[in-house]
Amino acid sequence: SPAPPSAGRPRQPPRRSLPPSHGTPSALREARTCYDPLAGELAVGVFARMLDAGWIEQEGRTLRLRATGEAGLARLGIDLGEVRRRRRQFACACPDWSERKPHLGGALGAALLEACLRQGWLRPQDGSRALQVSSKGRAGLRGLAERTAG
Image (cartoon, rainbow, N blue to C red; front, side, top):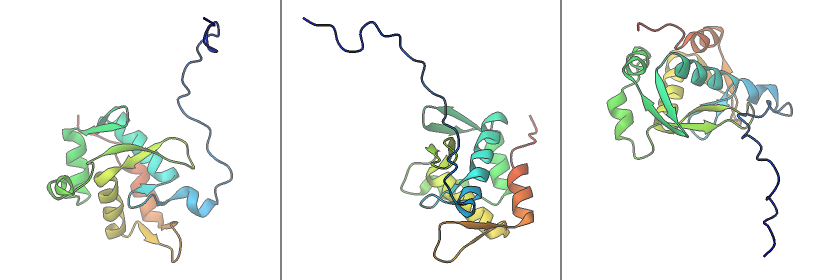
């Protein structure tokens, strides 16, 4: 029987991430909605800092919120009990199509966006998924999960 087409070819290591998509309009690139979670450049940065600070642990696309993350998100006014009762996945790593890296998805990603809207950090743009980012919001999102107590 003939060898399968892949026989004899060395396996390539999986790509970790692709370069950002340069065809994305800047209004959508910085901050936008992904259904109801926050997406875009700022959201990808928040996700990376949450991982680095130990707020979340990732296994594949599944995430686990740690105690430091619970405390940090509670300071933003996120009611984690209410978020856990939502009829959907609690938290996941959602592939961001413009940045080609993950942002926070699921009910927790939606709760983060809701908190940012309440704080006045973000404002929806009529007829668009793009979000306007205030200077306070840019600083708040970039500072989120930078410092931990542990």
